[in-house]
Length: 170
Picture 1 (tube, rainbow, N blue to C red):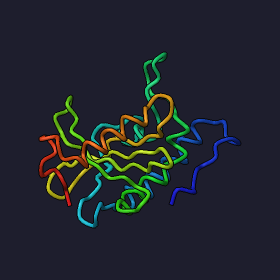
Picture 2 (picture 1 turned 45 degrees about the vertical axis):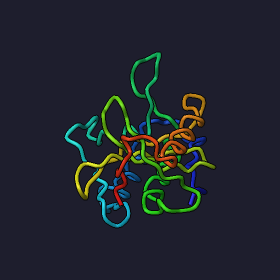
Picture 3 (picture 1 turned 180 degrees about the horizontal axis):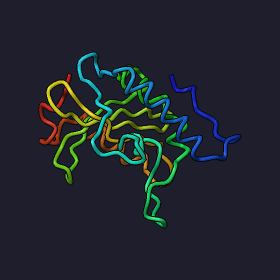
Picture 4 (picture 1 turned 135 degrees about the horizontal axis):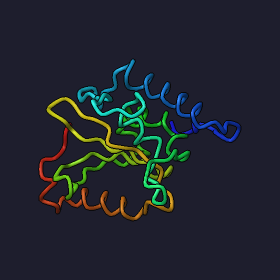
């Protein structure tokens, strides 16, 4: 499931990379519906678009650049775009740690799918009874601390956080 990493070494034109990635995103989420646990629709659309592409697309292929204060292509994220749908469809795979985490700022519980051996996370937020949206996905590198996600996973398993009582979607 985690073997397909897109290699960008021979392509230096960022516009071509973005167009290619958007084609993958459209195939996986717009032209073909995606359901978590065969019941919860992953809605890829947004009224908020940038360059005629869904806002979530930009969150799964770019990251904030502190210097320029804008989002820049993140090849570590982007090269794993094909993993996102596979992880959603195979959320119960033995190489995926599934856990819920209460986001204090947003006051919402989100679902995390963590391919822990591969250092890749997909985050989903529920919208209603049977709908949700991708929040983001990213590769855990120097900007993201793996220990944070291990702690969140263990906190979920321990059932000590009252914000996570009866939080499971399925």
